[in-house]
Length: 82
Image (cartoon, rainbow, N blue to C red; front, side, top):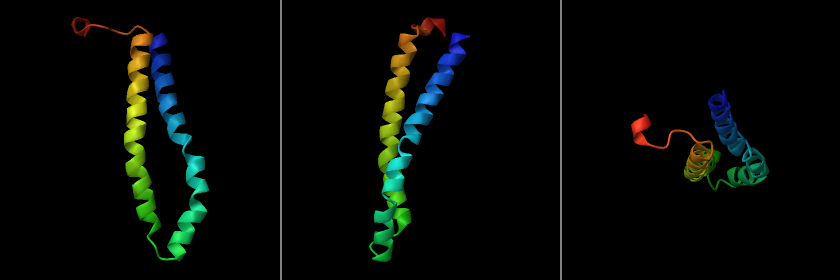
């Protein structure tokens, strides 16, 4: 029972971390619009750059959280148990 709740909490954490970035994206909309109007660069390039920067940070945060959670809840600690 506790293993499924552990899985759910890990998935929920990853989802909440990702959703926490949405307000920052909306705050940047006027800036992106001004850049588009001034023909500096296309909004797709801005979105691509933010994604490329954000993916490694989200990946590292999720991996670190998963490692801490794995050992904190006492899941299998040795290779022989697998």
